[in-house]
Image (tube, rainbow, N blue to C red; front, side, top):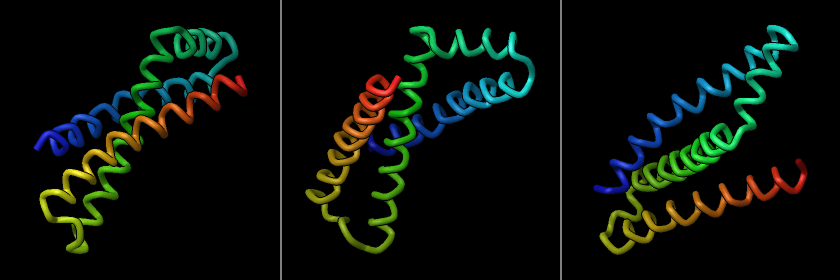
Length: 108
């Protein structure tokens, strides 16, 4: 039940993150000064925190969708297996998020 609720919450959070990315891309197409303004917000500590959460929500929602796809095949429906898939979704989404941001800071 918790994973189902979290899957729905991350789906909603993806809307907010997508609006931020769309705003940034629109600013890039508008003018250099407006892009600098929006880019400053996106690269502030708060903007990076939102993007970090967006990255985690994206990976969590993706892995949750894969988990549901596995269940649609009829596999993994036993209680112990479903719990393992739930934990794999959480751990996998955290590890993937940390990996993406480690690469971002290593390159950036």
